[in-house]
Length: 340
Ligand code: MN
Ligand code: MN
Image (tube, rainbow, N blue to C red; front, side, top):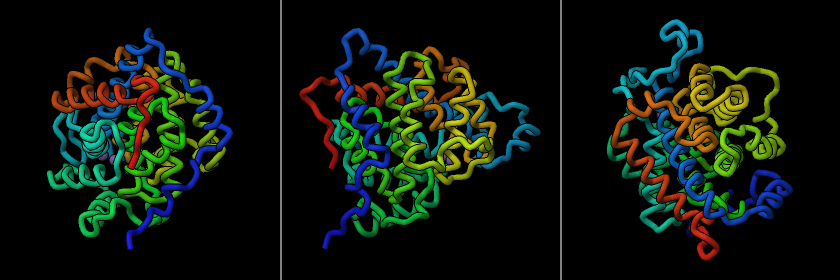
C-alpha cells in the first residue's frame, strides 16, 4: 500500500479570510514593474546567502559570547564552529539551491520526489553541516522511496522554512492553496508537522508580500504576519525579546520577525538578528530572504557581496531569475504552477 501524506491536503494554516482576500487581489504584473520584481527576486536569493554566510560565524553562540568575541558582528569573516572560509554558505543556502535546481529541471514544477532526490544528492556531496531532522528525513527517503516523513510534533524545526525560497519565487502570484501545496511537498520530505507548516506558510507569505511591496516598506508584510499570528499565536510578539533562538521554528521566526520590525534597512535587520545568536545562520538566512525581497539588490552591502563565494553568488542570481520567470506573476495567465 502506498502511504499518503497526512498533512498535505489539510487546508492552509493561515486564515481563509486572509488568503481569500489575497487571492482576490492577484493581478498580472504590469510590464513596467517586471524589472523591479526580477531585481527583488535576485535580492531575496542573495539575501538568503548573505544572512547564512554572516550568521554562520556566530551560530550557537549566545549574544554575550558574540559581544565578547566580535563586539557587534557585522562582517562576513567565516570561522565559527564549522571553521568556514569567509563567504562560504551552509545548508540553508545549499538546500535551497538543490531544491531550486530540482524545480527548474522540471520546467517550474514542484515535485516532492524531485526535491527528495535533490536533497539526497546534496547529502551525498558531504555538506559542511546538516541538521538532525534533515538527515533523518533524507535517510528515510533513501530507505523507503517515500518522499515524506510521518507526521511528528518533533519535526517542528526550521529546516523546511530555511530552504523554501525557490518555492516562494516560482509560485509568486499563484492562488494560496497552490502555494501551500508546493511548500508542503518540499517541506514534508524532512519536516511533516502542522506547526512547521504554519511557520513555512508565514515565511512564504512574508516573502511574497515583500516581493510586491513598495520598495523598503516593511509595513507591507504586516498583513501576512498578522495572518500567521492569528492562526498560531505562539509566533506573535509578546513583549519578550527572543534571543539565542534554537532550531525550533517558533523561536527562529520570533527572532526573525522581531528583528525585521525593529530595524531599518537590509543590513541593519540582518545584523540585528544574527547578533541574537543561537541558530544565527538560519535566522540570518530567513530574514535575509524577506528583507532582500523588500529592499532590492541596491540595498545589499557591497562589501558582503564581494566576500560571498562567487559560484554561490552566481547560482543564486541565476536561479532567482529563472524561478521568478516561471511564476504566474511574470509568466502571464497561460501558465499555472503545478505541484506533484
Ligand atoms: Mn546552516
Ligand atoms: Mn542553522
